[in-house]
Image 1 (tube, one colour):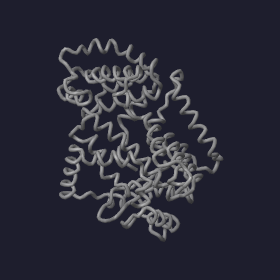
Image 2 (tube, rainbow, N blue to C red):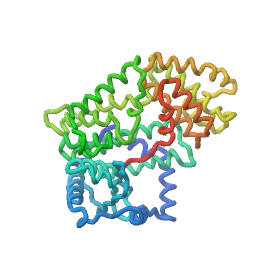
Image 3 (cartoon, rainbow, N blue to C red):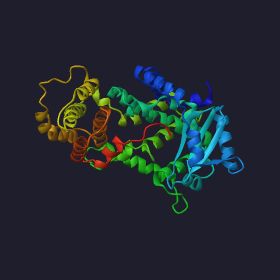
Image 4 (cartoon, one colour):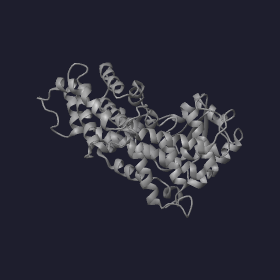
Length: 400
């Protein structure tokens, strides 16, 4: 087992293996492969026409960083680096094409990041390649014509979060500089270059701790969209990296790998739909809202179609929908169910239900304006922002 494989998040590996065997994903991958045989993807051609390729002579220090990461992570393919004009801090690694690995950075990131900060970003992007994250075509599965079982959609979202944890570890392993890694995350979170604001790691981590404390207190109704944001920054990723730095994978006297993974799973559980099986009062109130909300959203454009019934039953189980279900009564009771969630569950849990409602709505194939309006109304009544609905419905899919 390579060093890179040793530090990979176990939940990323396990979910990746399970998803790779899923019949829907296997079928879609085979379809993509046939399309590529007919019309090969031309990502590199597009990059050559829209971005600037950075030769070793143009960017010698960046190339040296890349070579160091390549050696540490065991990357075997030749690498090409590109930069595109953007004021945002961003980077992405593309699926290999014609035996080449392609990594692209925004101009702002290359201007504002330096030294080990850039190494962390480089290692993160190469980590996606090393762990073959692009082999799960999450965008094609969730946005394609063949709509997945909603439970598969939830598994894909869960896997994508753990994939980011693995890529972060790869970046931290390459950088070998806890302060620089934290500065990188600070810059990604704030959009600042670091030239005008002094960065203090303890203060930054204290902010994350306070977010956790407030989010765990159901009496505090402050929207916490950051918990569900992949870009530009997720507080959970910072905490997960702190656990990584305190483990035996980095320090021989640190916590065991098993303790590390248990800690990460506990953090990530805030974003996972365990309420579907849990037997607590809060979980029951969340399930009741999800059940009623799904049907009310489905009927928002006039009627519940057979396709929508199929999606609903994939999510809740065969036979869960009955012709005798009084959706009008469920709609009248929706406010009561929303209030129960507000009383029994925390803000993060309310956001999880709303996210799942968005996934159900999107799994049908498209989201009509009446459906979006219902989702936004539910969000407002839960004390959350309507913007969270927009971001969830339009979330960018796939590792970067």
